[in-house]
Every structure is written in C-alpha cells, then in structure tokens.
Length: 346
Image 1 (cartoon, rainbow, N blue to C red):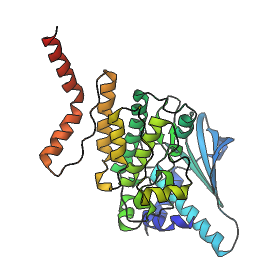
Image 2 (image 1 turned 180 degrees about the horizontal axis):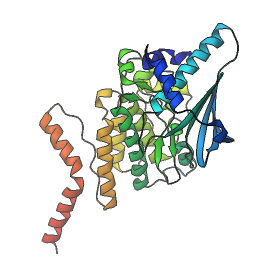
Image 3 (image 1 turned 90 degrees about the vertical axis):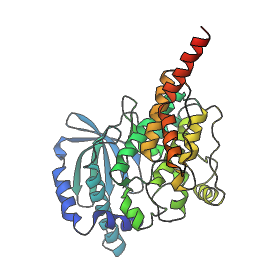
Image 4 (image 1 turned 135 degrees about the vertical axis):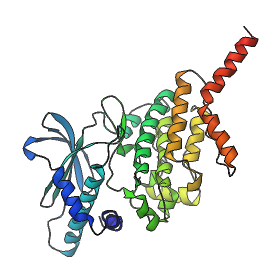
C-alpha cells in the first residue's frame, strides 16, 4: 500500500478529504438492501463478490485494513482510506457506457465497500483465454477494441490516467459490451507530469517502458497498454507468456521486445498495434485518434471493404491533414474505385 501514498496525496490534495467524505456520504449504500453472494475475484487487500442491491445485480469490492496498533498498520489504514476516498471520488464523477458505473459505497471501521454494476460475463481476460488462439474474427476484434478505446478516450478527456489497463481490468456486460474497470491505481495526468509514475502501479506485461524505468510519464502509458490489449484480441494469448514479470520488464526495456504479431490479422490492425506500443510516447496516437481509426475500420469491415492503416506522424501539417483524410475516407475512396471499375468493365 505504501507505493500508492505519493499519488494519493497529490490526487486528493490538501483540501479534498472533507469533499471526499461528502461524496462518500452522498453515495452511502443502505446495507439492509445489500445481499452478498459468492466471491468472484480477490487481490492482496481486497476481494470482489457477486451480490444484489435491492433488485439490482451488483459487484461488491471489499477492502480490509489491518487492525493492529503498530506504526505500519496505522500507516496502511490511512493509505487504504485515502485510496478508498480517491477511487470513490473518481468513480462518482464518471458516466460513460464503456466505464463501470458506481452504485454505492459503505465505510466501516477497517472495512471499505465499493458497489458497482455487475458485469455478468466477467473479465475480457477470461473471455479471450478460454478461446482457441487466433480465433476472433476482425469484426469482433474491432468491436471489442472500440469499446475499450471509447472508455479510455473518455477518461483521458477528464485528465485520468488508468495506469493498469489490461484484460483483467476490462469487463463484459450481458450484451458483450466492454467496460473499463478497477481505477484503484489511476491518477490525474497532472500528477504523472509533476511526479514519477511508480513502476509498481501497473503490471509488467502491459506496462510502458517509461513506467518500468520509473520515469515521468503521461497518458500515453495507457496507449502502450492498449496496444498489448489489442494484440491479445488478435491472438487470444497472454503477452510474453513464457517469461516471468521481471524477464518481461528486462526484455521490453533493454531489448525493446514486443510479442510477435499475428500473421492472420489484417495488416491495418497490426499497424495500429505497432504504433500504440511504440517505445517513444510521442509516436503513440491519442485515444481520440484511435477511436476514429477503429470506427473507420468498423465501417470498412461492415461493407466488405479494405482497411487503411494509420499513417505515421509527420512534421508537416499538410501531410498530417492528408493522412487523417485518408483514414476517414477509406470507405468512400474504395467505393469510388469499385464504381469506376464497374463503369469501365460492365
């Protein structure tokens, strides 16, 4: 828990505890309406249960703080309370179809409860790794990737950096829609600019090199992680599955290693993956651009037309404008070519 203390202090600020307490009070759940069901996941200091809140199916995250009186236990309790306040404060402000929705919270001595909507189909990780490798069609890959990208675009527009984007923290509802979840290690981008993002905040297999090096970083760390998520969608495999986390960190940072791209995946999608996991953050696209590109891919796939790869960034404003136009017009341009071909060859 000590690893979160620095960003929690900056996230909450000197005057926010009272505000956070008010938010917790506003979202306070009626425990008499909460029925706790079986455990569905667990972490080092928390567990998640399926449950019912009134008539609504929910997921309940329960965090237990140590009850001892020594200095370490007292410090951990303070940090867990600060993490709880920060996560609730953040979730209470978010409203998006691709971000998990807060239902209510409970606070008891040394126990904290966060109640969210239940995502019936579980994690994206379980969905992918229960399938045959390379089995998802491009249409499904793009649809799932769009859900993730739209949720992340929303978070970034509000200055939130997730810092632990991976399939385990992406959940599917009953209709197969993906929603971004688990914002417990998130921070405001201003925090990442002004301080180092601890490499311990995320997970090595999906972590950007600058986070592993414990350098100052920005929202582009999430874009790198998204590249790994998109790679998993194309392969249904765990990245670097034969390496330990420490070996992954060494390979990514010292050897610039990346998982092998799927040969059966459309080149345009593989091109986007490569751009997202670029070693240089400046070369990674923004999520707004990723959403635009994936929407273009989706349109082309629906109409049976080829996809146009995301162009490399250019220092020329005119070249950048032409590249953006090329992405947006992949469908119409191809349709025009087909029409012209039919005119010449009836």
